[in-house]
Image (cartoon, rainbow, N blue to C red; front, side):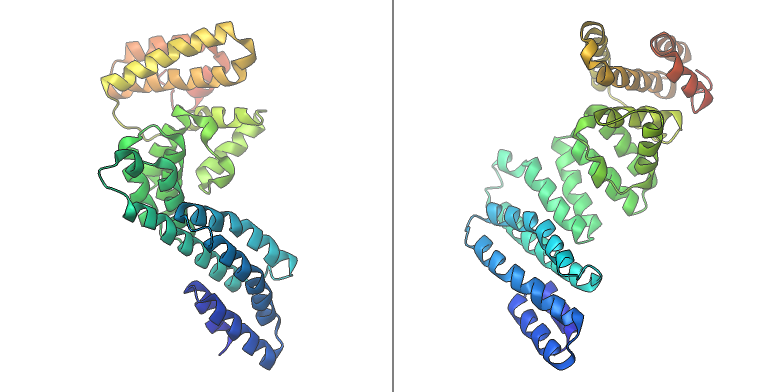
Length: 315
């Protein structure tokens, strides 16, 4: 049995058989790839045994996921970082196994128990497994279900944006990123986003002098300036009321709390932009849109001028 069979055995979850395959290959060829397989599996096997002794499927799945960066570190420490086939096989094994345990939780629950069914954290973990396994359509399906009962969760929306970009639906990706960076930008993990649109905006924001938590807040503003966040959906009257109340709250916070202004300033600007978009694009009320634009111009002349030079020339 050769090493290629070893990789397939790992992917299939037959770790002990994979170890035998690598040991057999190493005895015959004394090759580095087989040696790497032996070292990594001897590291992994006792860990997986201890993890499965936890009994609770949620704890088992969580422990398996947390093991992945440690296994990857072990692979690199053993000088096996160039063996991509081994890395992919082990990664597939870990995330497929974790997915099996997470799915077990869903399958075992009472479907009438809404609180359990609507466990956003659990669904995010299931979605991550599908993403790591490169089954993007299933990851999207899971998160779209979450969005039905949690439509303003910035984590869910940003991951959906990333996934839709990966499957080639650019407009929907832009839509979800725009929404994600409106509701709660601080919850978005920029380092986890693969989409080049967001990476480019992040670079632009940093180039304009913003750092740390400010970067998340300014991304949607530069997305509007550069006309990148150019896909919008219709807002309900209730959603517009929320935006108006948000503006009132942010204006109050901006005046009362100078120490928060690095956050309240960009959030207020982005809220003005959303209201401008609503009046101009959805209602077709140019004068009302320009009246909000005048408020924005007074509040931040620099951003107002940048918008005028970009996608808001009419403003």
